[in-house]
Image (cartoon, rainbow, N blue to C red; front, side):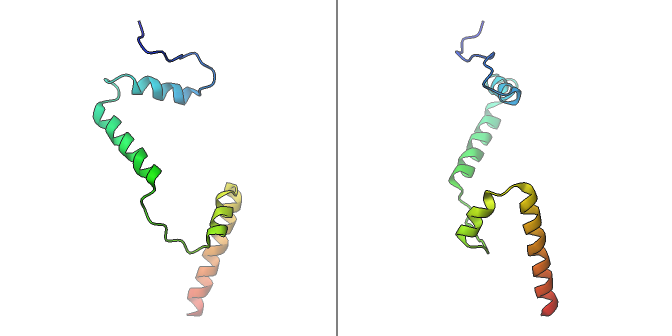
Length: 90
């Protein structure tokens, strides 16, 4: 008999989310050390303590983050070619 109040048949959650919930609530499958590691990792990612050393302006960077994968790939290729041309001129 379950003592938690989580509805495992709720259709709002994906299968991956449901599996993560099941694993996180079973200490034999998900030991406390891993729970602490994941919690600390999530905190570090949320704080984003790493300094951003960006070569692009903030407005360009915000525009770029909203683009799809294909556009990002083309922009990355153009930047790579421009850097190669600049190195060839030096």
